Length: 613
Image (tube, rainbow, N blue to C red; front, side):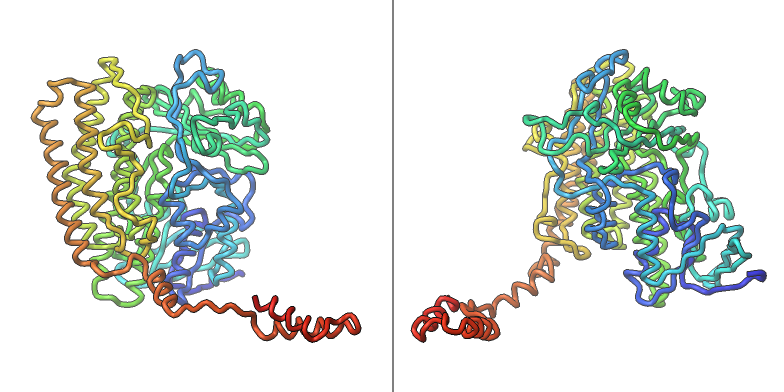
């Protein structure tokens, strides 16, 4: 190809990593006859050294991959299962030889919503092939420029291929090219300054290693403590200013991803930015992990000096979008990168669908979805605030992890299952509530955690998922609606308001316990602290009213329309105690073929009777 050629599509996606291939598949599954193109400089067959940060999903991202992209069976057959998040703090920082040298928060059972560990390069390769089979075009080339227009005019993506240049034109352009920030740099859309990122200033070093001796970490024998694997989880080895992850990415080759997320205020880049330094850091601070790493064979090493960034706009009125790492990433602590990606992908698909259908409220959708996703990114950013000071404190960090899991399982997960994140009315109210209650509370809680660390306080260890931490046998995965049991997977069928009501109430109880344990009567009676409690209880009462309104509006509506149809069809069921004629004919022919050994007529009658019965 010597001259520049042009192709026209509905959507051009720059980047065929996990965000790009997932966005393409979601568009293809939800918008009939849509024309989608993907561009990536990496070939379709990825190499072993296609490095990633984040090889672990959580409930929402697994639901997205499995349910929305139709990849449940693929995930089961190709990627290891995951049994939650485990956290470990050294009992003595100078002694980290065995797993018994740590304090633990172990997952005790398989969660009701599955999650998976992931070989990212394999996933991206396989889903890209699936997309091509569904009709998507893939261009193995490098984006050299993008011409973004205003309004609904066609945008142009200029691609350099081995044989020349190609222009891809489309009304909608998605930047899923990660840290290349193709659109971000073009329109000055990316924020890197730690002051604008809740003071998050972190980096990461990691390796992949295969054929490890996993018994160095855990023997797998725990008959009294758990009904799930400790190895097949995301294991967090905690320390001052850092945490180390251990993530199995392949169960056949016993491959692990082992990495550290570190905060520059505590651990400067030059301490871990080479393989030798990283190994030395593990040997000194988490010798158990060092032994595990050395038991296998190195595959690769990588260092990323700056992890955190976010975008000012996610979905532009001029039909460009950023998603995945191109949009935001902060720290893989809770594996929320793919969750932010999931919300972004579903929002983009709905905006594109509405625009292609010329729906009148599409601009309102774009505005609300953009605000909600920016709010989600802001919350994910805030979850890493003060990690440099608090990660290594087992008592304080366990309380923080418990509280953050309350929000996750109590509001975010049921909201996603019921597709409330696409409901404009709900998003407006939830956004206002969250800004005025959650953000203010969490800011004060993190400051109070710092105060307790300065006091060298030990307020006990909060065990996530246990039912003996708060009154009324509350636990963070407790169900307040039968949204899972009755398959309330259709939009707005799950009663998210029941979860919001109860979550605000139990967070208030958590906060009262936290104040009492940490600050005594003076903490409980502080006007500002009492104000937070009042606002939480008030929001709980308001959500109780929303719950009653929701129940009234959905009275008589089946939890799942497919189940309702199946039950209706079953009303005409009648038991039929007989075989079909072809079966009887085969039996008779078999008897006749036996010739002289064939049974007499009475015997044949008896045999037929036996067959019928």
